[in-house]
Image 1 (cartoon, rainbow over the protein chains, first blue to last red):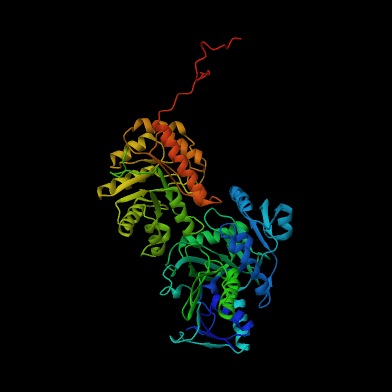
Image 2: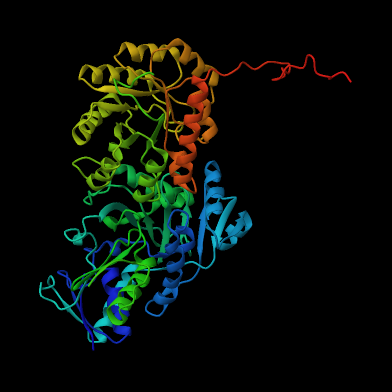
Length: 325
Length: 256
């Protein structure tokens, strides 16, 4: 049985581990934190499986490979298949038309249909429903993978990986910069709020001239508001401006969000390469799987399949951009 | 050829660096367009070298960097941001932007003049983002600016040259000052028009970065700006009410 060590227990590391175990490899995971948790930027993600929406600005592989993610996750954790609703304020309707031109897989919905889909969204005359999209709860997903892997006999070491491993997959995200100098951090900020007065059942995106703002329901009146995208590597704090923009977006969807409690503020850096696409690089005994950018849950299954193909079948998928075995 | 603080720009296109789908697409847009100046926002990317990876990519473009004070609403903020920009990019150039109105992002020209006075006094070479107001232009020049950058329309609106008369008046009022239309350009025809008026460059960001294909749009903008520049230099004909044949008709059997 092929033995593989995985460095990092974020979404990349756990998906690679899960895929390898499913294909019969022996896996152990090294992470100084011992398992999934707030040290990984995937802990702070939205968990939207939205390849059609993301295609507005992402490259073609995100649309194509991202579609595989919904089924992959559904075999491992609870996935809500309720689609994504995209709306814009009246003054930003040109943005809605542009969004429609650049994406596919949606149908236009009017006031009545919006009211049927999400009765708590008021005042939006036009929207786009991406019916085939889905979402999951990232922390639940990571916890489920962690549990399944342990049940399958995978050992999680609470320490960094030793140097002399025969075969390692480095999934440490931005912490792998020492080996990947073309990796950069893209700051993201998010909030978790609780508002029992508003009941939304699917992710809602509010188009905004500068960033895609979205609200993802987590159940029990809890919502994740995300996410800023700033070319900054200061992952320490949220700015007042970002907080205002996130909260304004929620308030624009339903003013009752003004009464929400703020439960959490999340700030972290997404690991990204220059084209914002993930990469697999084999360098001797280490395979780097990195650069998931804002597409952790969407692209990690494809990344995991790519790594498994390389490790178990010596097969190069399109995500492999360097192979120096 | 009017020079920008002693620098000749080979190409009349300046591009912003925000909102592209990825840094790779940004770099390609610069490469195909030949844009010689890149504006960079410091305020958003944060202090303390936080944007270093991104800034390193901008430096690697090999073009002249024009840091800006986008997002500043006061003299103090703008001056502080300019100081930071000089440190990060090691350039005296600064695109001075002091926003006065939240919805239209219209410049606060009063604070702009004051900030320009302070910064030119400190040795900065200031590119002020202003309106097409002649008196404001006059005051900015008196404050030490040697370039003016009037808007075509509000930032990001893509509406083109909403007051062509005003832009024309500015051009004839300041025949020796390099002028750049900054903001409001949505289409290549807007860029060409600005250059036909005798402007020295156009500066734009959203129209390229948010286009469906930013690289193709950058190419289109560059071609249009060059076309407009050539047309201005070629001294176009005046429009007239009646047709004038380009070939003489006398002696031809046109009456038969």
